[in-house]
Every structure is written in structure tokens, then in C-alpha cells.
Amino acid sequence: MTRIRIQFPMSRTELLPFDPQAEFSVVERRLPHWSQAGAVAFITWRTWDSMPRVVVDRWIAERENWLRDHGIDPESDWKPLIDRLPPEQQRELQRIMAERWDQELDHCHGRCVLRDPQAARIVGESLRHFDGDRYSMSDFVVMPNHVHVLASFCDHDGMLKQCDSWKHYTAVRLNKLVGRRGRFWEVDAFDRLVRDADEFEHYRRYIADNPRRARLRPEEYLHYARG
Image (cartoon, rainbow, N blue to C red; front, side, top):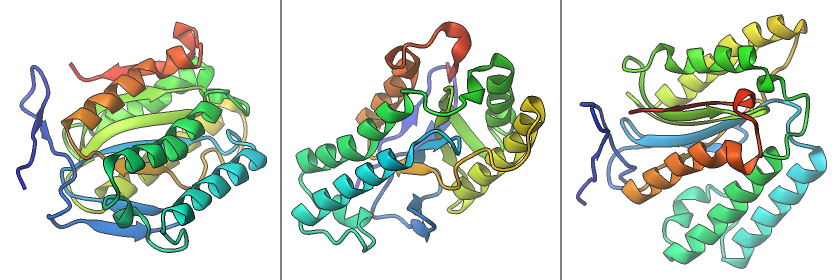
């Protein structure tokens, strides 16, 4: 398999798409997380109050029904089986899993602390702090109740470790900012290893367009795109 190298303008940093023939790891938490050294990942995490329980239950049931209809056991490690399906079926599931979920996030449920520019800057500064050292950051957007990130990590466990670090550090500072204690972020995050250059560009556009889709004013979000 020939790997497509994604070269950023004005930069020497190269980010690679997922290679199913190369070594990768799967970590089981509440969700299965795939990781591969150097591969670009699209990651989303959200505030703990951003998704009503009834919406989550409906989304999970829809995903599980789709998997069963396509001969996949939803209780199994189903992610590697998805890559064996025809591309149109993969895209259909992607719409169910990501687009509909993100549509609910864009309804801005919950307290939406990150709508405050000061709160958004705390997250943005954290995301860029170790760029070029622990990871290579491509794009991110801080929305009122969630964050989308497009980045690659140096080793197999780098993604989960760094996400935990981002969430822990920012939770402490954000809770202090709003004068509260306890849980700030939802425990787990959604992530997908980018398969090719077209998908990489799709996620860049998705991140850039997210504030417009949610009808946010410029001061209600923070967008970063590598030049």
C-alpha cells in the first residue's frame, strides 16, 4: 500500500493517514479507540452536560440497529469490520455516527461555558501548547459545549494520554473560572483515524464550517487552522 503524505503549506510537518497494514493499537474504554503512530486523528470531546440522555439513547439504538442490519454484532469490536464494507455503506454509517451526533451538539445543550471567549482561550492555548513536541496540530474549533481537533501523535498511546491531559488541565482552570468544582468534560471522546487525503480535507472543512452551521457569532467560538 502506498501511503499518502499530507503536506501542510509553509511547513515541513507531514501527517499520515491511517494504514491498516501497519502496526496500530485498539484501547477499549467506554468506546474503542484506534491509534497509530503518526496517523491523523479527528477527535471530538464535549462538556458533561452537552447531550441529553434521551438523545444519547436514541443515537446508540440507531447505530446498533444499523450494525445488526449489516451483519455486524454491535457488542463486538466492530470498527475493523466497518473497513470491509463498501464505501457507500461506510459513509452511511459515518453520517449516523458523526453528523447526527454533531447536529445535536450544535443545538448547544447545557450551560455552554465555552461560549465565553476567556474560557475558549483556555482550551485553545492548551491545544497549542505542545504542538510540534508531543503532537502535530492541524486544526481545531472550540464550540460552546464541545471541541473538534485534527492532529497526529508520536506513538500508539499518545492520543489518549494527550486527550486526558488536555481535559484534566482545562477542567481545573475552567471550573476555577466559573467558580465551581467537579466534573467538566464527558469521560470519553470520539475519534477516527483519517483514511486518506480527501477525508483529511473533509474534516478541515467540517471544523471550519462548524460555527456557521451552529449559527454562532464570532465571539462565541475559537477556530484555529494551520497555515
